[in-house]
Image (cartoon, rainbow, N blue to C red; front, side, top):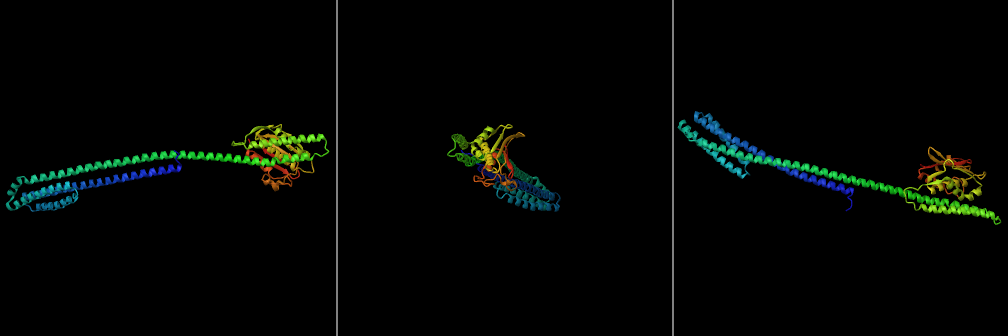
Length: 449
C-alpha cells in the first residue's frame, strides 16, 4: 500500500471529526429530547400531586363545613361547604384534563370521583337532616360512620394516586439521570476519540511534512548537483574551445619559424618543442575527457605543485614565448603546493599567462612574473605583466564579463577571463585585477580555503 499523502490525511481527519461530531450532536439531541420529555413528566406529575392536594383540601372543606353547621346550625359554615364544592369541580376538571391520555390514571380518577360524589351525598344528607330534624338526628347520622368511611377511602385513593405519581416521577428522574450520564459519557468519548484522531493526524502530518522536507532537500541537492555538472560541462566546452586554440597557434608559430634552408639542429629543436606541445595537448584532452565522468557534488581536489603546472603551461605556450621573446619569471618558494582541481588550476595558469603574452606591448620586451604567497592562512597567486594594460575606469566593471574584448587582437574571444573567474569562484575563491594603460596588469587570485 502506498503512503498516504498529506492532503488525504487532512481530508480523512476532517471527515472523521465531522462524522464524530454529527454522531455526538445527534446523540446529545436525542438525549436532550428525552430529558426534556422527562422534565415535562416531572412537571406534570408535580402538578397532579398539587391538584390532588387541592382536591383533598376541598373535600375536607366540605366535611368541615357540614360538621360545623351540624354542631352550631350557623349558616356561615355552609359557605365553606359550598366553596369546597365549587373548588372540587374545578380541581376534578383539572385532573381530568391532565390525564386525558393516561387510561390507567383516568380509571383511578373515576374511582376517586365516585368516592367524592359519595362524600358529597353523605354531607348533603347530614346538612338536610340537621336543617329538617335537628342536631340529634344529624349527629346520629354522622355516628353511623359512613362519612368517615368515605373520607378515609378518599384519602387512601388520593394517597395511592400520589404514590403512583411519585413512582412515575422516580422512574423518569432515574431515566433523566441515565440520559444525562449517557450524554456526558458520549461527550467524553467524543473528546477522547477526537483527541486521538488529532494526535494521529498530527503524527501523520508531521511525517508527511518531514518527508516533504526530505524530498525538498533531495531535490535541492539534485539541483545543486545538476548545476555543478552543468557548470563542469560548460567549463569543459569553454576550456576545450579556449585552451586548444593556443596549442594550435603555438604549433603554427613554431612551424612558421622554420625556413627551407634552416639547419638540421633548428629542425630538431622545433620538432622537440612541437613534440612537447603535442604531448601537452594530448594530456589536456585526456584530462578534459575525464571531466565528463565526474559525478560527485563538487570538483575533486588533489595536491598540486605550482611549479609543475607552470612548467606544463610554459611548454604549451613555447611558440608564443619564442615569437614574442618574452621573459618569464616564476617564484613558488613561499607556497609550493595547493589542494585544488587540476583541470581548473591548469586553465587558470594558461589563461592568465597566455593573456599576458597576447596583450603585450610591441614596443618593449614582454616581462611576466608569477609568484605565490600566503597571507592569513590564505594562498594567493600573482600574475604580473608589463603589457598594454586596461583602462579600469572605463572597463573595470566588465573586465570579467562574457565576450568582453578590450584590445584589437585577432585571437581575442572574450572568454578566458570570464571562464577563469567562474572556475575560481566555484572553488570559493576570488580574482581581482589592477592595471594601468601602457604600464601593465596584475591579476591576483585568492584561492578558497
